[in-house]
Structure formats: C-alpha cells, structure tokens
Length: 201
Image (cartoon, rainbow, N blue to C red; front, side, top):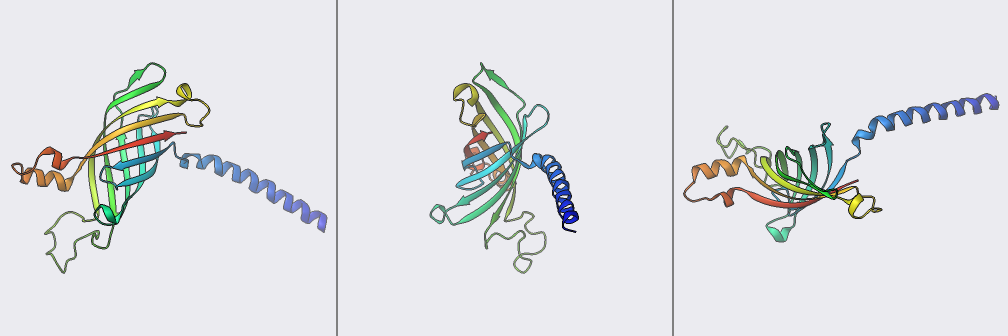
C-alpha cells in the first residue's frame, strides 16, 4: 500500500510541477519591463510604479504608479495612476542611447481622500451641476525621454537601459478653466511638469 501511495504522490508532484511550469511561463507577461520613479507631475509629490512595453516596436508603454503627497506639501494624499504613451520619433545617439523628443499620451489618476469622493453628493448639489469627478482626473500628456544603453555604458549592473524623462500634462478641469478665463490664466497655469527615471531590466 505504501508503495502505491508513494507512486501516487510522486505522480502528483510531477504533474503539478509540469502544470506549474506551464502556468509560470504563461504568466511571464505580468512581469514588468521597467521600474519608474517620478517627482511631481499631477500624480503625487513623489511616485513609484512599474511599466510594460507594448507593440512590436516597443515604442508604446503602459505605466501603473502609486503617488504620495505628504501633509507638509498641502495635505496628505494618495493617488493611483494608469498611463499610456507612444514614442513616434526615435533618434539614435550612436550606440549609447536614443532620444525620444515628443511622446504624446493620456492617463487617469485617482486620488484617495475623504474630501474627494468619486461623485459630488446629491444632497449638496443638483444632479448634473458638476459633471466631473472630484477624485478621478483624465489627463493629456507630452513627454520627452533620453534612453541610455547601460549595457554599453556600465555593464554588469543588471539594468539594460535607463530612461530620464520630463512630462508636461493637463486635465479636463484645467482646460475648461483656461478657456473660461483666458484673460486671467496663462498656459503655465494649465500645464504641470513632472520629471522621472525609468529603469529597464
């Protein structure tokens, strides 16, 4: 009996091992292509995230970021952001890097705070009085990035590439306010700037 039991256990281990290996291989797409650190830019005083390269040419990317604003910078705030952008222009800088001068994109940021509900309370405002969500903001973004080939510059670090970028963005609320108050507001009041670094492994 023990002999049959040991064979059954061995068979189960082998089966689960093979299935587990197949599942792990199929789940490889969940492993991010990059780790991102960003300062400012409408998604937190500082933010940390991870990104995925998409499309065959790897010029599109999707980033997911967690951002934080400390109480000393205007009130404690936590944000989650999902970004999409595309790099239509690529300028090669010999073998050590590439420049992406203009990368259009869009992103959604959600702020977690007791004073920022998803919708305005109907008890305070008539239905449809404010169309936007206090917590959820859609943004347009325009960035540029210089990407350094670390395998050429500093091999052995485990990092393939480092991208240093700046990103201008605006949202629906800022744009509408700008067109309603063109004489009082300038474009610098509408666009926010963030800078960041992208580590690709």
